Length: 579
Image 1: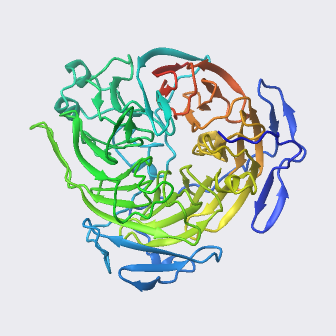
Image 2 (image 1 turned 30 degrees about the vertical axis):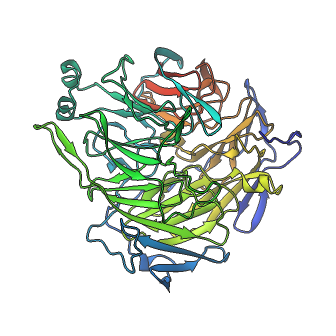
Image 3 (image 1 turned 30 degrees about the horizontal axis):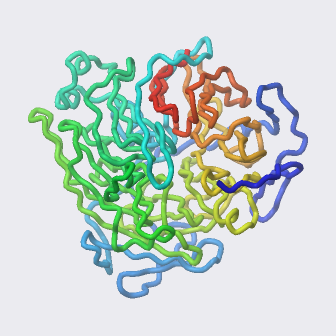
């Protein structure tokens, strides 16, 4: 591992709004806590409420400053990058990897309001919906403000890519599904589970290459674990129509001495086996460093109305799959036969060509960060690039989308990657970006350490405040004040000003989540690299309680009512009750 030996002392954190840099942390008052907490400005009282968001697509020609792309020939097009840093060019291909001069599918791919992503109760994709704002479901009855481990389930580890991967890692969020009764019956679940309207199944792809299927209440297996052969690092997705289909991207192609093909995998949960795939070894890929890398860390979004899956790959290819999926509960049969359309792009700074972030979506506009620091917006139907903005460094964190008065905004940031390797500024930049134009609304800078093996900066996904905390956006930033430490910081969504900032004794890659209490209050949860799971007050950043999960909690929590689920490096899946 490569680490800097000095500590960041005396460095100011900076808030940048437009072209003006302001000091964000002046006059902060220290708070009492096991971790040092400083408080700043009170959050803006109100944030514009979401509009009644329609699934109808936004016309690209109506976007601010819209210009038609330039045709380059051979099915390639280009447009200027936001910020005047050259052009982004892209090409759309059919399933046979032939360039398409014009791609205008008859179906419209778009999403409505985040709460309409699925009608199935639970957490069915990374962060729960197309805005990536719902890693928890339901309401928790919280009176004692305590965390209690109520069950564990042993899982394995794998040696791959010159490293050892125990338990579950980044992003590693479990899926929690309260299936329709006919789906449960078709999958052959126990009659007591099929007849129980409160039964919730845990689906968890992890490092050891298995997909574990467990009862949320007890942790007991609902069906045998699916052996996929090769490890998962990212988060899967369950079909939002309640079809018994699981979509999960392979993160490792080695298992000890064995080596396998790169695949994005589709599993039939009736037969409990893989039935379809997307190859990560794609001839249209521009991937470099290493050439041929074909992992899939992104968690797919599925538009249930158009039967379409969108999955960005670490090979730099964005896949649009017409699933041709059907489900006959009476016959206990589900089928899927994906037809692919693919898009690749280049920018003046592209040198690695990979996407590890999951995509967020607002109507027909989709957004993802890439390994070269580009935040890219594309049209979900035609796959043409709408805008791209380069932010100077690797970004693996998934952007979080907020509809504020009918206007989409993204909350995002970068890790310390290329700049650290090039010995330039070692700083993470936390931003609010206009989703229609790609322009920065505000930016907050936080020094962070470069570490090639374990990145510093923003690797987790931001937490959008809900309910009484709706004025906040919370970032969990790794390796800030020291290589082993981190910062949990709450910023005002409107201004970017610091509301509170907490120094973490142990850095974290785990994405924080917010639980809705039946008392009307919100409660935050995140894991850290020392193996602690924290229950904290999102109004102040202070802990209510912690519980040890043995070793590094790099994965992200999912929650259903009072039950939390996450795995750690201790090679266990944990069911934890918040009370």
